[in-house]
Image 1: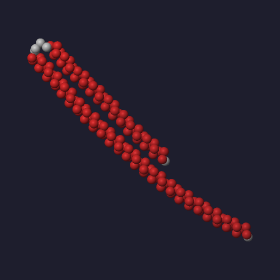
Image 2: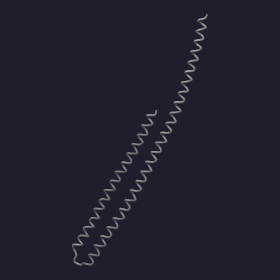
Image 3: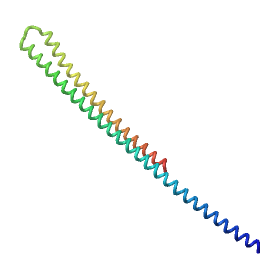
Image 4: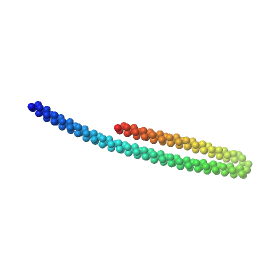
Length: 151
C-alpha cells in the first residue's frame, strides 16, 4: 500500500510539473510572438520611411533636371537667335567681310552641335531614369527578402 501511495504522490507531482512546464512554454510562446510583431512593425515602418525618402529624392532630382533642361533650351534658343541676327546684319551691310559672314555661319552650325549635345543629355536622363527604376525594384526585392527572413 505504501508503494501505491508513493506512486500516486509521484504521479501528482509529475502532473503538476508537466502542467507548470506547459504553462511556462505557453507564456514563453506568447512573449516570443509579441516581440516578433513589435520587431516586424518597426522594420515595416523603417522600410516605408526609406521608400518615402527615396521617392522624394527621386522627384526632387527629376524636377531639378527638368529645370536645368528648360534653362538650357532657352539659352540655346537665345544664342541661335543672336547668331542669326548677326548673320542677317552682316549680309545686309554687305561690307565685303564675307570671311566674317562665313565665321558667323559656322557659329550657327555650332548651334546645331549644341542641339546634338542636348539630345545626348536627354538620352543620359533616360538612362538615369531607368537606373532609378531598377533601384526601386531592388529596394522592393530587399524588403521582400527581409520580410521572408523574419518568418
